[in-house]
Amino acid sequence: MRWRDGRRSRNIEDRRGKRVARGVAGGGVGMLLLALVAMYFGVDPSIVLQRGVGSGPVAPSSTPLPPEVEDELSQFVSVILADTEDTWKMIFRKMGRVYEEPVLVLYSGTVSSACGMAQAAMGPFYCPGDHKVYIDLSFYRDLQEKMHAPGDFAQAYVISHEVGHHVQTLLGISDKVQSLRSRVSRRDGNRLSVALELQADCFAGVWAHNGHKMRNILEDGDVEEGLNAASMIGDDRLQKEARGYAVPDSFTHGSSAQRVRWFSRGLRSGDIDQCNTFAADSL
Image 1 (cartoon, one colour):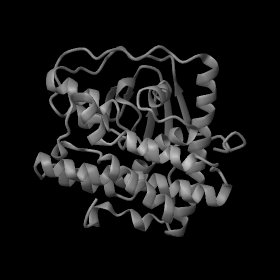
Image 2 (spheres, helix red, strand yellow):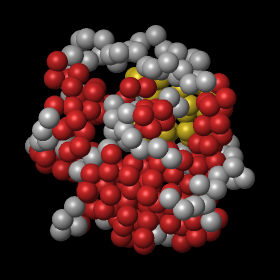
Image 3 (tube, helix red, strand yellow):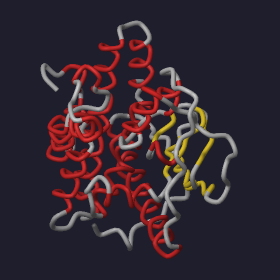
Image 4 (tube, one colour):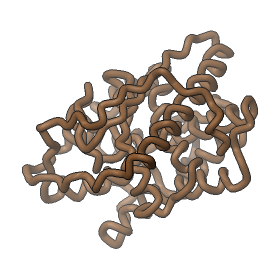
């Protein structure tokens, strides 16, 4: 990606080094769920905490990144956040709306948000309660080494997916989904969660399409990096890796094929109207 000359966002809140004493507990089936969630993008920690997690401790976060690596990554996420700001401001303006910029929180190990306590093991997430994206930069090492999704555009996809959840919040989509989830079965609630996540993937593609159109940010191989990242974090792949088989009714983020399909749809069209996963005949 061509990012080094990009504008830096002013909406960065740096909490690195400010560790929180309280942790997130997990055990038994809850621990398995948390382990899966740790590999996902875009999880709201309040959803995890409300699912009856047990009382065992969670493993601490991995060793810190070298200072020079962490500094470059912090610059990178600031540029990507700024690029999403510019892109979504343009899209909202065309819709006759005003885009409210989210804040991106950098933290180390454990963090407190309006959605509850979270650990780095849960991965990056967006909290609709405070309109903030949270990320421990060590996640990017896991993205490359454990999830086999290297590349700067794969890293940008992480941020743009979380910003996609912010867009859903601003448009009132997230509130509607959460209201519906409280009135339906767990299986149907999971289906709604899948639709929400796939729409955020599509919104990430919309950002990439328009960002490249306006600022020529993509280089050869970037699209492949993004598609690979989308494939690597499908529910089916993660469940098979964790326990040897997949349970489609338990999916909350979508299969690898679904995530690639919707990210690609946004990337090709650049049109937010093409991202209505809730009205799709098939995801």
